[in-house]
Length: 64
Image (cartoon, rainbow, N blue to C red; front, side, top):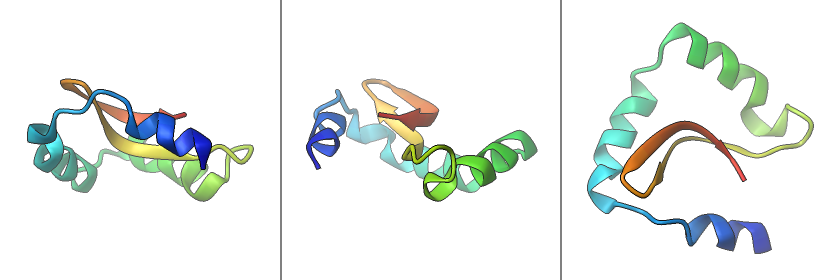
């Protein structure tokens, strides 16, 4: 739980929330294939997020 607090304390632009949601729904093949490999902690137990907002940017994949 402690790491989750670090993630939430990253800079965040709430105006990008809707755009990040759109990007999650509009996936390309490489994103789908990668996500299948890392979703639900399948990759060595690491927890990945998709379309994470950090400051004024939206990153495709994020692992704390």
